[in-house]
Each structure stands twice: as structure tokens, then as C-alpha cells.
Amino acid sequence: MLNTKITNLLDKHGVHYTILPHSEPVFTVETAAAQRGVVKEEMVKSILLREKKKHRYVMACVTGESRLDPQVVRGYLPGEWKRLSFASAEEIRELTGYTQGAVAPLCLPEDVPVIFDEAIALCKKVNISSGDPMAGLELGASDLIKLSGAILAPIAALRE
Image (cartoon, rainbow, N blue to C red; front, side, top):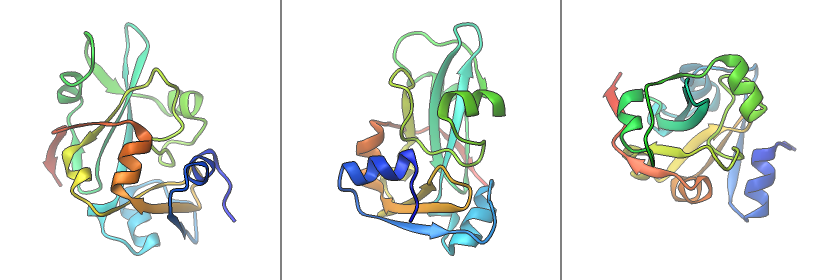
């Protein structure tokens, strides 16, 4: 039985999910997809971005085969945000409580907006990290979007 902040949240809201265990810790989309036996297009990459001057953060998510354009993300944020860069491993751990590569767009501080690329909404099911590098979770894309409170926008720069 897996018990993380993320599985607790899903259980609390009655969201059906499947635990996809790994035989070893995974920290990349490619490795996670292979361990879980799923396609990269159903993987959700959760990328924490930071605005340096105001120390604000945003969680941006794209499908596993996509690349994120941080500056496009900025255009969809409420208010005025300056240049965004990738958060450090230390910042990720401090903000989310999870190791870089094992982060999901759930259980984040309330002041951290979440933006999903529109392609995520086209998926029936998606795979996210469970918060534990030894397991992933598969759930309905609509459930993930609803629970994360994500804004949908075209934030993927290109497909890999």
C-alpha cells in the first residue's frame, strides 16, 4: 500500500487511480514510462518554475514527449510575472517536499499556480508521480485537471 500526500488527496476525493510500482527509483520520463509499461504521451512532466526577483513559483505540466517553453507559461499567469527559470532541486524539495523527478502537480502550496498544456486534456488517462520514486499513479486526466485547479494553455514548445 502506497501512502503519500498525493495518494491521500486522491483517496479523500474518491478519485480512482492505479498504483504502478517501479523495480527501482525513477527520475526521468523515459525511465518511468518503461518501468510502468506506458507510453510517454500519457506521462505528465511536472516542472517547477521560479521567478527570481519576487521568489514566486508556478507548476507547469506537459505530456512526456513535449518540451516546455517557460516564457510562454509567463503569458498565462495572472498579474505581471518576469522571466521564469527552472527551480533548483533544493527549491523543489523545499516547496513540494519531494525529490526532483518525483513531483506531481498536486498538494502544492495555495499560492503556486498550476498550468497544464492543452494536450493533457486530450488524454483519457495520465500518469503522474506518486511522490515516491518507487511508484507512479495512473488516473483520469479530467480528475487530475480538476484536483490540481490547473489552467489549460498551449505551453508546449515542441514535441521531442
